Length: 422
Image (cartoon, rainbow, N blue to C red; front, side):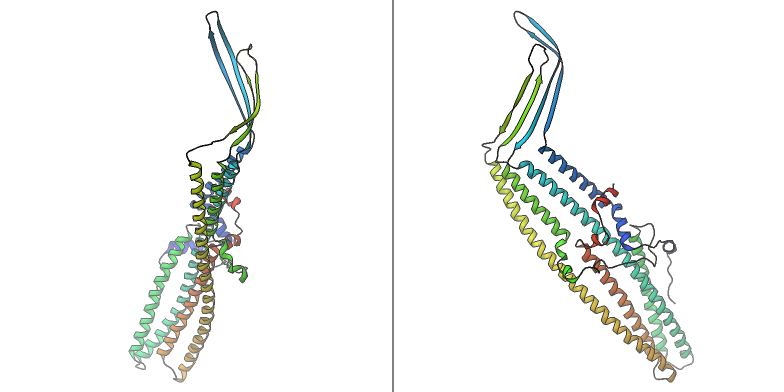
């Protein structure tokens, strides 16, 4: 007889599970992930860095004040002064060769790269959720199929035992039936262990296990073929490498801008501690230009150029490899679709054969061994269809994860999710 699951705790968890769609489940799981929360904090920090660097473009106002006592002694007299001195200085950067602009752009690129990193993590979390749910549903469907065919096998075994006891068929057929049931029992243990693992994975993200009403949609179903073929261009690794390329370009601009002078407009007012001393005012331009530094700035420019070239070559290499992997994934997707169709046709033929053999039992045109073998064949083909469908679904989520598709599929918003991750 088929073995029964022993994990009562997990079975009870299944009973209290709530039904929801996978898109909502993925979207709710992302802000709770510790890795995402850490990346979200990094993203917010990078956004503030943009404000910090942008502040250099604005007018700067500084003030200071001194309260105290001052004593001046000469041969003829001694003057004591007590009071407060204060000064106010206003400065505005006029020109720096583009150094400030380059720093601001670098900060913005860092923020964009942090956002892309955040999206990549979110996509990975969403994929892990989808993968766990699909594995759970697959093992559940396989166990249900196994239970159905085990009942058939046990029924056939009972019939064979009666015929064997009556001496109408050989005992070897009964041994074959026992062997078949033993294989099904072993398969049941394997599938139960697989289902338990998928449940443990699901409980990383949920308090409850999804029930049979849980809806799993394909993330690529609404994408046409032409768009699928260029989907690789939105891969996280390409975005990361492209961000590094932009950063390298602005690092070069920053190094080149350091060769230029800086000019700022300054204005100020200073009030002395003594009432007898006049208040002073200042207004003018201040220029600062490093003429010689031992070749440091030139060397930095050369290093930045080499870094830019290296990053460009790395991006080209990543593009080629990503496209190759994505094309292989799309090819595998089409192969799986064709395989499923062929195996479904194979199952129809196996079902027909089993029905014919069963009908021929009454006329003696077939024997129990053939029926036992045909029943096992139908089960194996049905199980294979479930496995291939699961593989196809996970492959589609994997392709979607390696592009923008999965986050678009679940309507992921970086800003909203980042706030929710606080």
